[in-house]
Image (cartoon, rainbow, N blue to C red; front, side, top):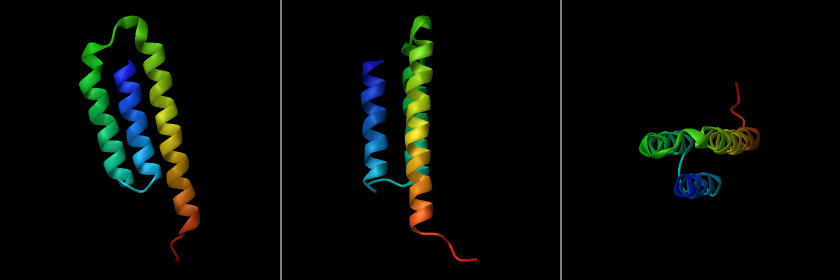
Length: 74
């Protein structure tokens, strides 16, 4: 779980600092989850869910902030 948490934090940080795009970030987060799921123990599911939700919230907040900073004119 430690490795998954640290890897996904790095991905979220890279997204926040505009080093990777939103689609790339979500793809990398999905890939990290797919790589680590076989290693998780049944007792770690709640912790995994908490980490996934925190990552999702951070990425979505940053995406929304960017959208508000650069609204597309209709």
